[in-house]
Image 1 (tube, rainbow, N blue to C red):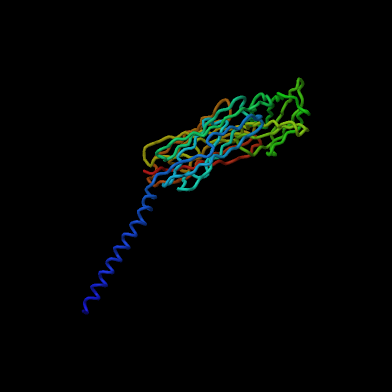
Image 2: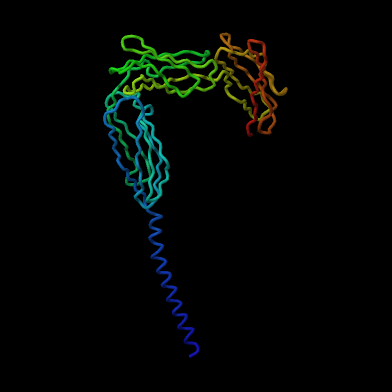
Length: 338
């Protein structure tokens, strides 16, 4: 009788173990099914009709993207069908099951006139719906005629002036008289030209530190009932000096090899190139000046270069301005990996 109890205990333990295994299987199988499940994309208000609006600014709209499936939803692409007037970006591209994200759309009405129909293409890993289309529709009423539509302020030859004619296509309560611009490097004025047309004049500061880009300006009248006129002025302001390429790279070899360094200058304060001094006797330089300006082609020939990769020195360019002040410009020289 003393062996009966251990046998009974072992049998009970075995049954309990089998019960635990069966229970674990029932619990784990749904989880495995979720992990290996498929995503399913759903879109709230896929079609947006913004109605009839004036073309004085930018419209914003958010599309809600949800994952109603069992697997993670991956958004691979969000593509606008118009790179000029419609821009779209997404908060996150990896959407777990039961969560959502937002696609933000911005429609620039300032370049649109009449009926508007634009699309945003959304590609994802939903096997049932891998490509979706978000639609924007409406009518843009033109409030102002601007010639040119995007005036250009070219600072290549120093501070410059650009103008644009603005003609209201409706009756203003008061004439256009104020121009606002967040960039204090510019001065802008608007004045009547006769015949209902106004002239916008934009000037840059004597020393403009910015790069090329678009500067937004808003023209208003003294009456708040008149809609504003928004204009983007493109500023062309290339670097005063360009080195192409910005560094010289040679191969680790004994044979001669030549690279060409282009030095281009813009603006009114041009520098004269006096000399190009290499870092060692392994290099030889020849300067070919542009007869029509202050641009140069510099031919750099190297030989007997070491096999050690990395920077081995710099080409020293000796420059001089109109007041005979010298300026040094260094161009790094590298040896590429063998």
